[in-house]
Amino acid sequence: MSLILQISDFSAGRFKIPTTTFQESDLNDFITKYENQYLVELLGVELFNLFVADLVAGVPVDARFVAIFDAFNDQDDCFLCRSEGMKEMMKAFVYFHYVRDTYTRNTTNGVKQQKAENSISLDAVSGDLTTRFNEGVNSYWCIQRRMCDDSTLYPEFNGVNLEKTLFI
Image (cartoon, rainbow, N blue to C red; front, side, top):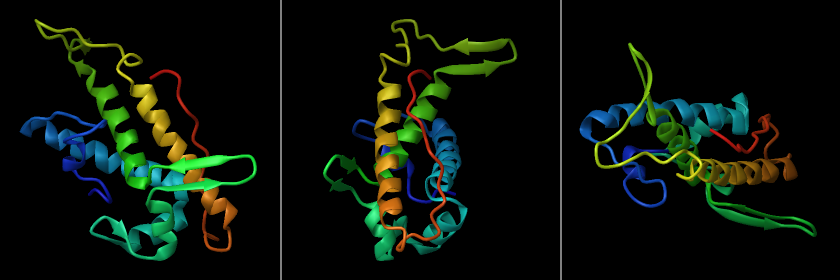
């Protein structure tokens, strides 16, 4: 079950994933898996459970969760931090995993790359997969920084670090 993303979130824009009716089930599975994985890693288990309990139709209600869910800019003397928001962050991660994993297929004859007769697939780097993932990581870092900077508002925070990727 998805928490904040829907298949329709991938119908337009830079995270567009064209799907057929048959592929929508796969995309939904990716949404469910990676939303849970990255949100638990972002927040830690206890804060994740509180966040999920606060969601109404995929959007948090409590002001402390809204403050990390929505897009924001923070700046101190040395650092500018820009989060595109938790939903955009999750779209970046799901997009990365879905496109990367559907670029090849496991078959009974081994791992195969899809090839259409009149087109060729781009490699992942030229397809901007790493860029999309790393955009999500930037928001991830900013959200965690906001929670660390205000530990009295987020005492349950126990998230883990996430590194940018250079390759898929």
